[in-house]
Image (cartoon, rainbow, N blue to C red):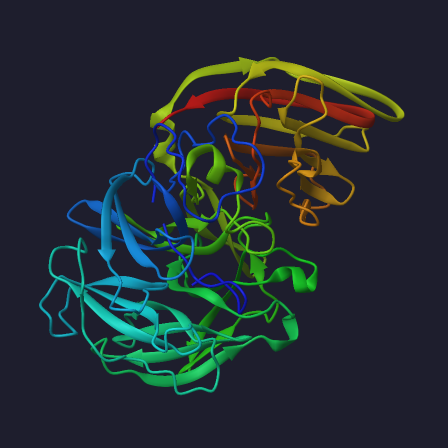
Length: 509
């Protein structure tokens, strides 16, 4: 469940179409503008969306769940969408409703093919956090079950993992099957730790030693992600991910993860320092799920919002009557390099089937004098598209691309390369009534010998996701493009930079 002690949990789904202006609470200040409904990202039809829930694969389709609310506040429900390709989603309505006065917060669903829980082979079992004291301070884990492939669920009753701690932070169970030991493992987010439990029937659970990371100063663990994955060198590894408050340590509020193994009932990380699957500001409460056709690949999705500055007040409230968008689904692989294992991600392959009107642009060479920033406007204008390019600094001190640029050049979002690595900067994309500050610039490292940097950029009306060097790092950010924010330009600072292999494609779902 993505919230903190001062931010109650909410919920939400996607359907593109005409704007529906709501009279409910939670609207952003400022005037309504041109529609901000994305062209190819999953959004809620109306009202509120947050945390995605790990998808399950049943009868040839993925069922993905997310938290939904009609009130921009507690309580919350699980809403379901269905997809065959992880790009186009069909809304299927509420799957887990309000349980009396108790909301359904984040958790995870599994298909119990072996009938370990006794509800019948193929039953879909969900472990869900519910605040059983009504105010969110006593969070416990409840079981729900489905006999119709995850379309609707029934409550089992009593909590299967009660809260025996003194803490009010005990939420978001993620369930994984440990084939080697023949057991289920549940990871639960706590303050500065992840609690682990094991079970053979999904009903009775026994506590295992927790995984702690107190020295990292990245806040409490939310929406933990636990899975086993085959790396590209053929070895198998466990991965533990959490969404955290990285700003406490000068980092971002996204998905930190550790690779490791189970030894003596304890998860042991390969390195105490976490790695990051996204370096942007808006990839929170992220989940991954299995590719049924490839054990070396997973899919992943995050909530594109941030409790620090946005959450219950974004521009699409006023323009379209909805609040909440998911990131594009990614394909994720585990790469081995010099004894270290790192997750890399790229846009899902199926996105190519929705691309059209490909435009290729000749290489652009930009020369700038000492202390000067020079730019060239490219012959392309849009608010939703895919862009691919290769950036080479050559002799320049910095090389960058600006997207969402206004006609007078005063508004834009910029990403590129300088002496400190790769960066994304939305300082010049703020709105008078919606400010990102101080969360404006993000940075990710590049190899010191990097000469050319390849980028794949997904721009979609209210967001930008930049995949760098085939997904070695990714930056995902909200950006609300105004009606005239459609230009694209390339820039060099103090020297010569080259921009090659430039192409644009229109994407519509």
